[in-house]
Length: 219
DNA sequence: GACCAGGTCCTTG
DNA sequence: CAAGGACATGGT
Image 1: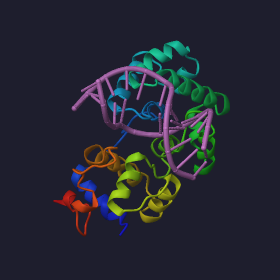
Image 2: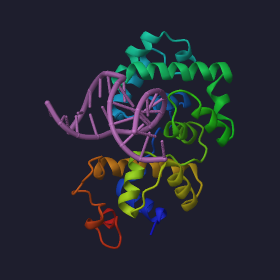
Image 3: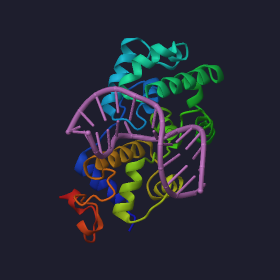
């Protein structure tokens, strides 16, 4: 019953092609992936806008930035002391080790992922977001919504690595598909799958659907 | 005022 | 390994 291709088609019909991070620079995508940790995108945009105005929307600029200046610029995105530190730490690491962001991103997936996970402030989701959206290499990004939705729709409860492996085995290994499917999970989650333990209004609950748990999406 | 957001890290049991 | 707290601003 775990037909991810079918779920994707249903979501795609319901929400359209979402196209996250279209035509942005790799620097902006990476910076955004750190700023968006546990934070609404609207707030992240404010911080990105501040960085852009200050000409600090690049890894090279951030690597040389003054910490308190960085804190002020990213403040709207929340956890601003922590994020300023993470951003600067990441940027300094990249410039020192690779000389440029592109240098780091051009490595193969496994090397890149292991390296990213060793940097403070970069966990699995952020590492995978950077690999998928900035490096544009096929790795499926799992987030809290993905885990919750899969629990409700398919009734299976898996951890990050297991679910990632399962989804990657279930659909084509395609960067554009991975990007959009991940975005679709988040979009669906924002509509129907908030964190409340009991979500009676959620159409994804088992009792809300019969055979096809996401039939309502296709109507 | 309560709840939540496109997580991660650190400490405990 | 699972659970719980800290980190913080802004929208509903």
